Amino acid sequence: MTLPASACTSVVTTMERAEKLSGIGASVRADGKSRCIDIFYFNDDTLQRLDSYQRIEGSSREGDDGLYKVMGSSRTGNKILVALANSSADKFTWDRINSYRMLKLQMADLRNEVEGSPVMSAETKVIAGKEIECTMTLEPLLARVTLSTICCDFHQRPYAGEKLKDVKAYLTNVSSRCPYLPDSTVTPDSYINSGRYIESDLEDFSSPGMFCAAIADSIGTELESPEKNFYCYPNSGETGLGSPATMLVIEGKLQGTTYYYPIEIGRTDGDGIFRNMEYRYDVTITRRGSLNPWTKVESGTVLIKTAMRPWTEKKALTIDF
Image (tube, rainbow, N blue to C red; front, top):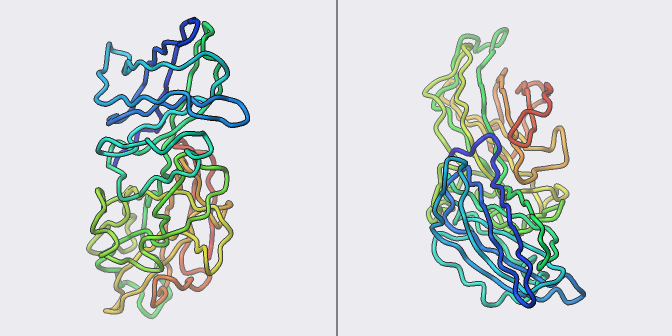
């Protein structure tokens, strides 16, 4: 799955003056393939009732600026405007949604995420019926986890000169659902790959390669640069038995024994995983790992250089654990 550096879609809407209904001309900048766009207008009052809903499918790109042209409408007045992109591969029925609060309760399903066109959302407040222009930026619900580089440094060990073989990497404790309009803190209520890689968990997924991949037949002292991307929903709740941290697990064989190197994503230098953020890891393995994928390895087993960024680098640091 490849997301662009900006990983966002820009929506520009122009509201024409009208007595009862307001025509909405929307220009949608889609960096990836846009399968569909759902536009909701809710009254910005106490009840926040649905005013209008439109779905745009197969929008055509016009001109060289990469904009998709769409149209919608609502009654005049103060509105909460919500836009969703790629909410489902098939036509999605929103008949039961009659208020903004109800939409806030709706969840996206990780099984429906498609490579190249992730589910995205944005919301803003507008005054329909005025001659104004509104710009919205749709962001993916997903976060990206990148294994950038990896090598082994076993010098001064009894197994110096050995290589880690049959190396693979995958995500565990991945939230399987996410609100279409997530708040700052998202605590998962269900998981895939709970504690370990579970092949049957991924049978119904559109893109199982988003969560697991073979890395190399063997890895030694020479630096490998797989630049492998994995994707997951936010997980920013308190870590505990009921809310485990999402992990990037590196698995490989050393002298015939399988070892695991689990890394808590976003926990070592932050408060968890957030949407539209990238978590990059440069990994150096220095000794034997754990005998299972859910037990933390001994301090000093893995040297990690991490960078957390909203698709562009924000900061980098080295962590020893």
